[in-house]
Length: 226
Image: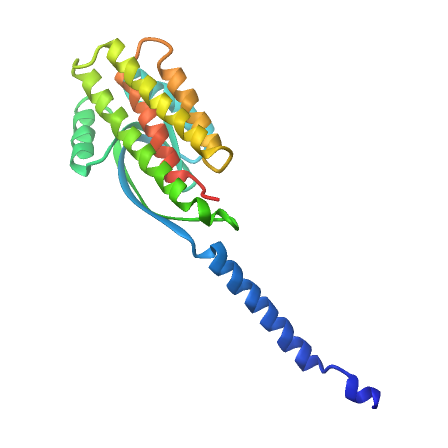
């Protein structure tokens, strides 16, 4: 048999390479590229300032806190928002903006929605239910903090009751941390537990509880699932 008959054509090599790459892409797409977690939420943040860097936002944060707002810096879409409070109803947020305007504080409402989270690493699909449960628990904790802050504002809760609620939130976060072990939520849960310790170390104002609430909402909005 001649050497010419044994030679593999360049066309055959090209076709084989294309088919191999296509098969690999399909495999990874099926494995995790299209694996998503559906979790819909909507938050209405009352914001005092929007800055393009963390340093500028931090300079304003203290003033907002002194005014009675949370002062939490929420990073979203490459912008740093100095938040006063967070609501789950647009009408409530709008009423607060109007009230603050009458007191000389010019604020606006930032609406942020979550819809779905793409799982960004191979093999993480088997943790899909765990991650969904995490998001649901965090959302419930944010609502608990919201109710607690409102109750402190109107005098329905004293310091002991408020600290007990923060302690319950911390216990729930520790429970999530134990359940999750080491994964994409670990660092965020550690951060939120540290916020719990910070806001409950002294006299608790409603702004402190709102800071914890917004920190939890921040995790829900910005968590990167892998």
